[in-house]
Image 1: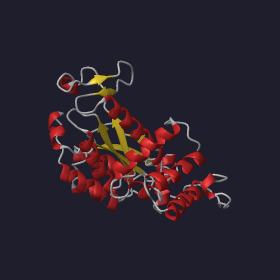
Image 2: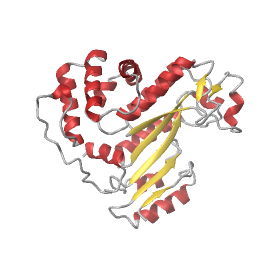
Image 3: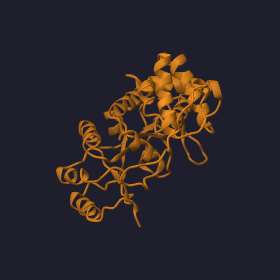
Amino acid sequence: MRHFKFVDRTFNLNVKTCARILDFFLERLDERLFLHFELIPDHLPEPLKTRLVRFPPGSLQFEIGVQSFNPAVQTLISRKQDNRKTVDNLAWLRRNTHAYLHADLIAGLPGEELASFAAGFDRLAALDPHEIQVGVLKRLRGAPLDRHTALFDCRYNPHPPYNLLCSTTLDFATMRRLERFARYWDLIGNSGRFPQTRPLLLGDQPFDRFMRLSDWLFATTGQTHRFALERLFDLLYRGLVEILSVAEPAARAALATDYQASGAKGGPAFLRPAQLAASDGGSVMFGTTAPTRQARHLRSER
């Protein structure tokens, strides 16, 4: 066995146990090893840091539950999180380790308005984790969070996945926009296919710009799934130029580079009749058994 997923959400809370587990794998490193851990974001003591820097690219993935940067919301949901330490730790991990960082935010938490969620997304995007998972609040019956249902008039889907439909702080239409944002973000921002294009999409106002793109994509296509790769590139070209006012040469150059790196055959319409040289699309890094999306992100950082 070479793939291990630890599902304890407080994995790094007990430093001695965490260090022993990391030491176990450091003694057995090989090119097929892939480890997944879930971390508390504001707890990264030195004994863990000295071990984490020793893992090579493609071998280590962290799922990091941020959920919200709003102190009032954190207090309301009884979440103790030092935001300054969270930011410092994420920045340290990104700068000093080869770990693949998958951080999450939750849309629809009690008391969090759209502006607050947007500010949290911008703050997290500035730290540049490989993936930002934008989740929509779901109701788990009997969970402590359920005590806020009446106070914030939270209305949930009565069928799985029991997602939030609206509340006093986020109306029905806004929640649908956030759901589409989350889907498009996963398709584009998290996919690893657009390392050159993503900075142009986000600029210095990541949430606002990507929400504008999201609204336009849905108005234009009426869908959030089943985009052929060439069509997605064509849509992003139009969105960059027409909606986000990116200069056409810059948009074309970034998308062309990303398309070449994808290894796809042919070419999107905006690049024709230019001939694209297809790359082999392979992964040449330690940990060749890393999942495909992680491999794309790590390949772009070589």
